[in-house]
Image (cartoon, rainbow, N blue to C red; front, side, top):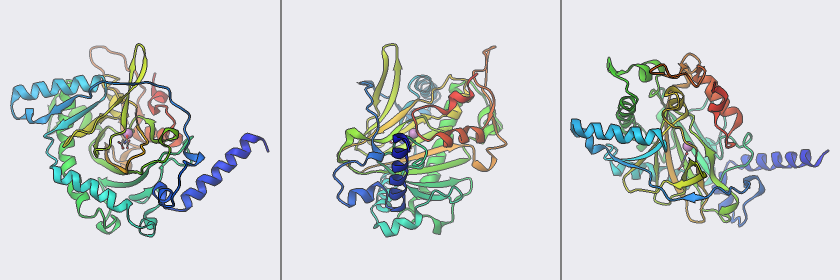
Length: 364
Ligand code: OGA
Ligand code: NI
């Protein structure tokens, strides 16, 4: 057996042993681990960090027509460049945000025996707790455990949702869905699309882009050797749009491509704000006008860090029927071939988080 085969067999055993504990990274930390195991080691990333402010957009401006125009302008500018912005006065009350983070924390801090029944990689279950959805595909594991809830269009029954989250999740879903409709309106206007029969023709009616909602409650335990690993490997989101709630710890960074090379820029925790980012589906549909920007989460020696990512997109059940095609204007050329949502998601799942974009595969 060659050395590489031996080491990949060893790695597979280590991954399997870790997965079989069903206790996640939190389980390792609870066991008093003082070094980061090899399966979590990432190659060093020498990309420098850079100070740049992620735009903060106050949606209170939507109350007046002139305010709306300036909000649309700010959304357009952010979507076309960084692909990330933060929103304030977004209609999700601060108590709901705090309770949502607290619920994810409560779940992850239950005894391992209470979490284990939820631990699964079975895509048919609408509630899935695991450490690294791509544990067996990605080149290196992340210092993170996640509770994934597929909340729309078909929510799980209340009994399927862990008791720690049962009360707040449906309420949070309602609030964040309302916000998503506001955001779709702003993004559509920013693209120059027109309101049509209660929706935005090309985006909403053709793609059902807000009908699917997956919520990922992430738990990033404090890490003994944060420089050796990552909370989340760089990636762009396989969604149409993502709305992220993060606690005060920080660690989320976006990749800014510049003439003098790439740089990581912090997305600082802003009290009361939600982070919005453009997903791959919207980048494709906007024919690259909007940017689905790569981002990552660095591991930290402090923690745990909690975040809740709401991924809006076409529901899985219709993904094979919905075709995404770039909306082109003024004789512009399409930069992507048409693809089904299913094909795009399959590409994403097959490779795991490996630092490459699933969109490359569809570029013309
Ligand atoms: C994600 C993500 C960032 C975070 O779930 O796709 O980028 O801060 N999360 O947890
Ligand atoms: Ni992401």
